[in-house]
Length: 267
Image (cartoon, rainbow, N blue to C red):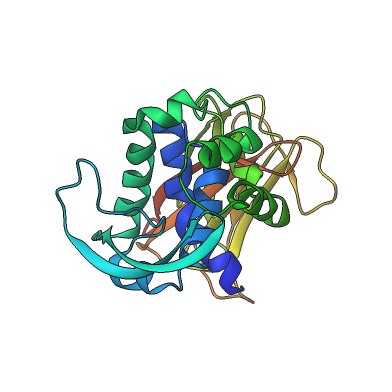
C-alpha cells in the first residue's frame, strides 16, 4: 500500500462522518487535507495535527502556534508568519474543519452547502476566500478526479447490512468453523465482502449474480462456513474474532460497513 492510500485511508472515515453530520462532501475534505498538508507531511500537520491550514482566528480559544506560510497578495506569492490552530488528533482537525465552514456565514453565502457536487463546493471555497491561491478550486478538483475521491460522496444514510454470526458446530477433525449470516441488507447493495480483521485469509464473498464458484448468492439469511485459513491453520476454540463487513453498490463503491464479534465455541 502506498503513502497515497495510507493517507486517504487515515482521513476518509472522518471525512464521511463529517459529510453526514455537516454536509461537507467527503471528497472535498480529503482533497483539502491532501492539498493543505501535503499528504500529511507538512510541519503544521505533523506538529499540530492541523490538516487544513486553519488559522487561529475568529472565535478560536484553543492552542495556537506560529508557522511560516505563503499568501497571495495582488497575485504575488509572499512568505509570512501567522498563527494556526493546534489540535490533539486528526479526528479533531477534521471535525473543526467542518465547523469552521458551518460557522462562517460567507461559505453559505457563496453557496457551498447548496452546491450539488464537489465542483460546486470547490468553487465556492475559492469564491468565499478559503485560500488566496488563484488555482485553489481547480487544484481540489484535479485531486478528486485523479484519485477518484468522489466515490466517498455516495455513502447513503439508508444503506445498511444487518448481520449475525457465531462459531457454530462446524468442526472438521477438531477445527472449529465460523459461520457468518447476512440477516438483511438494503436494495442498493449488490455485493458483500467480509473478513476476519486479524487474518485477511479468512473471508466471505456474496454476490447477487455470482461470477464464479468463489461467491455465494446474496440473499437474506445467506451464510457460509470457514473451517480453516491460511493453508490449514484453524480458528481457535473459545477465541473471539472481529468480522468486518462491507457492502458495495453496482459501481463497486462502498456504501455500507458493519462489524461483529464472533466467539468460537469450545465444543
